[in-house]
Picture: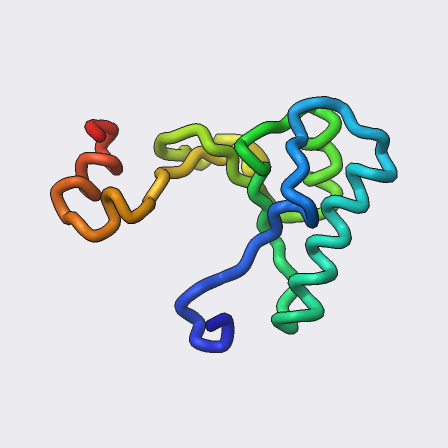
Length: 113
């Protein structure tokens, strides 16, 4: 799939551990680095983007992600502007409930659904 160029792969921690509370630095860095290494080993591509599990993050997690990745997404819904923090990006949730229905998809993007 990666070779097709149709998708990109980002990191999400190695155990889906939530990062909303301060973890010991060695555990936090292991969550980030082991995930990044495993993706790289399995795809040949080093992921540059991160997604906070369940959207949870704290200042220490954001700082560690800044040291490890080029950007990160939260689960906050909405558009991003050029001056937004690239480690706290918003996004739109696109699951089966809207991805196969054009009207529902456009409603989600426009904040209606």
